[in-house]
Amino acid sequence: MKSQSVMHTFFKKYQRHLRKIALAASLISIGSSQLAVAATNPADPDKVLKWVFNVAETGFDPGAAKDLYSNGVNYVIFETLYSYDYLASPVKLIPRAAESMPEVSADAKTYTIKLKKGIYFTPDDAFNGKRRELTMADYIYTLKRLMDPKLSSPHSWLLSGKIVGLDELAEQAKKTNKFNYDTKIAGLELVDKYTLRIHLTRPDFNLGLILAHNPTGAVAREVIEKYQDLQGQVMGHPVGTGPYMVALDEWVRGSKIILLANPDYRGDVWDFKGGASPEDQKIMAAMKGKRMPQIGRIEINVMIEDQSRWLAFQGGEIDIFELEGPLAPQALDNGKLKPALVKKGVQLSRIPDPETSIYYWNMQDPVWGGLSKEKIALRRSVALAHNIQEEIDIVYNGNAVKLDYPIPPGVVGYDANYKNSIQYNVAAANALLDKFGYKKGPDGFRTLPDGKPLEIRYTARSGAVGKLQTEVWKKTYDSIGIKMKEDLVQFSEMLKAEKTCQLQTRNSPWIADYPDGDNFMQLYYGPNIGSTNNGCVKLPEYDKLYEESQKLHPGEERDALYHKMARIMEVNTAQMMGFARYRNMLAQARVIGYKKHPIIYGEWMFFDVEKSK
Image: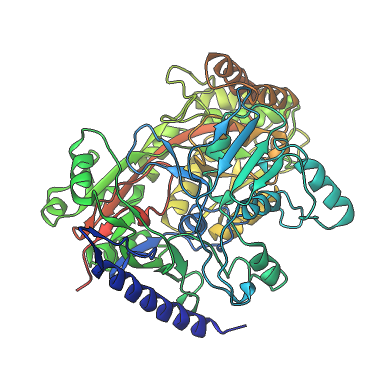
């Protein structure tokens, strides 16, 4: 295998070679028309974007990576069949690697999709020196892989029970300890090299949205098979067809990630249409007609501490960064940029995130889980004792909106009139604990009904936000006489423990994978334990209604089921609704055409920057 440094040098030479071809083509004219420029990435290597992550990446395998930040990188490396219009509001699904929108049968059980021709993976030793074209066989492999028990993908829930024959293939793999990728299944019909027909077990009106989600970004079988037996190499060896690629020799895990424009990327012309707002109009005027992407190099630094990111932005070391709640007062006044920053040309893109930050108590935990009256009373008392608005004010400086419903604003299925049955009431919380035998000892702290000690371990992400969260929750538990132990851990370690139901409780944010209520109601579906059901909830009544809801088109009938499901969650107090944060993205004056998209993270292929000086 070539060394990472040698491969990177090859890519740089290859990029220069293709640019010469493109330049030569652009200078040749036939009659009054000019020859089309060769299909090479139009990005300018002198345009450098400096970005920042507030947590470390976990790696770049779309089937395995779960965190928002790693998937921002995955989005620009691995191409999904569909994506979203950059400016449209509400969000609008558009083709990406697909040639057009899918043809959907009347019963919504069959999707026929055609692929654009002439898309190629970046060079890799796995291809034995050959230029490797993307075909629909790659998408079949990618979808099958999400269900491979060996991968144990956190995204398997996207396809589970949906595609004819796929679950059966996965079950067979569990028995034989090997997933047979060569087995043809009726649900994934390869019509021809560029045409895929997907047959579903039941109607699914969200399949197009799922095929726009990062985990369905195409991977090459040769690459996965070459590196999967090497520790961490699939995560550390991304090979895709998108506009960017990781500069492997410059990647310092947990510290710095460098993305370079993929020299063989076909590029496209910026032609999005926004609304009448001054922001959209300014973006359209600056960007229309540009060949994209424009940015040749993206430098991503990992800075966990809030103040470090803020100082780096002020010093011009970062072009765009997310202004989280603790820093909001330094830049914002009532949601608007302070005059001093406006004078410097700093730009603000602010949206309410399509997210829910929920509180969960692990339903499999011996202390907090279970459906007995005593356990429900314990969880409900904590829910009653927690002042959500106070948390918003202290931890996020008011930079969030309290939620009553499991589906947030801006997502199909949201109900602004829904009122949660659990509202802040410390007196009621203490009375409930007294009634069910959680007695206070001489030290003022409660014991379990059987007299054993009662203590909660609250887990949060290392850093300023996590520290503030633990302080707020300590106040909540103190108010009802329950001991709380602070547990601050690295983000990646927290996610690992959560997937195996090892955490007792934490604030668990979920940002929309796709903008439909189904993406939020599935968070409490029993079979999703180990993937998206972080609280390890299993309520048969809820599960039955969720399965019924998946057969329905978005509308009143489905909304009625969602209401019943929300009440079931409240009665059992398996989870507690929290809030949706505002996402404030600050950009330097040199950034052109940036706007935070509600679903896409890592919008680097849609905007521009001035050349580095």
